[in-house]
Length: 232
Image (tube, rainbow, N blue to C red):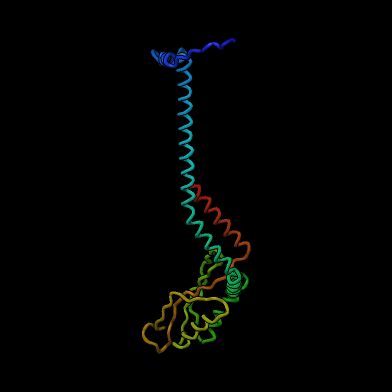
């Protein structure tokens, strides 16, 4: 009966052989190294690269996670706000309609460019109707705002005390918006009230802008923003 040959495996000699390959290695000539040191070095480099990549990935993921955590309170607040708006949507729509109606009523109190002459005439007639004399009625330079234009009018009227007061009340009750500013009242002749009083004031009236003027305002604002951005 044939018997299989025995294989003698000396683990100690293998270990010594492997250890001998790591002795006397020249770091300047890694290409001349034995196979085992080359393989060990390659595996070490791969392990370091994987480790660094993993650390970088975790760091980036950690930063993203922290950024999302910081956004969480703001998102919750936005959610609560939008939820409240959604619950009160019908009421908000009613309020919007009321505000729009109020704005429309205010706009009706602002004359257009073509109606300004009639408004100036109303102011003049309010004074004459109270028996006052206009010593000065001088419209100034129109100041164009975002959605309306403002016209100042320098006026000086003379008359009796009660008539001056009634004139101021009539100005306030005009169907169009007119306001009095820089009001000063004194004796007409500078000495006493026997000949009446004199009132100096700036009456300011307002009108809405026509479509062409609105476009000009928008273009001017856009240009100003562009110029401001260019200076930065």
